[in-house]
Image (cartoon, rainbow, N blue to C red; front, side, top):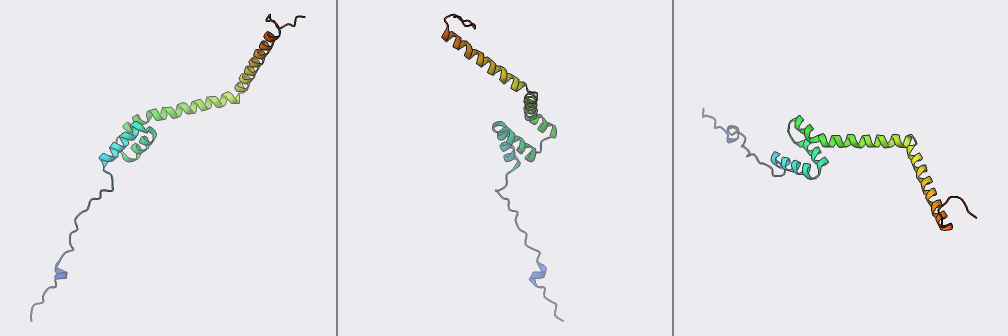
Amino acid sequence: MPAKRKTPSTNRKAPIKPQVTSSMGSTYDTQMIITILLLLFVYPIGLLFMWVWMKWPVWLKLVISIPFILAIVLIALMLFAAGSFIRNGRFEQMMRDQQYRQMMQQRQEQIWQISPTPTTYNTY
């Protein structure tokens, strides 16, 4: 019996495909440069990119985020103080006092126009 001849398709392995690197994705170095520039020029957006992209230690991310956290807390305290100021009626009282001062100032100006001597009493 003649020996069977092997077919080339059964003997061959699958061809090896070369790895293709894409230039579309950004490298870690590029991400770091972008993040640092954003932290310098557009701080809140830089913080967002830092927390999402960077593989820095959490303590470093927190240290960099402290000014933003303090600003948010300060704004919240100012809004709370303004709200309590308005709620307690101090704002309305202050406005009434200011209106009273303006009214008295207008009266004084009228008195100065009527009489050469500055007095609140009408002299006849």
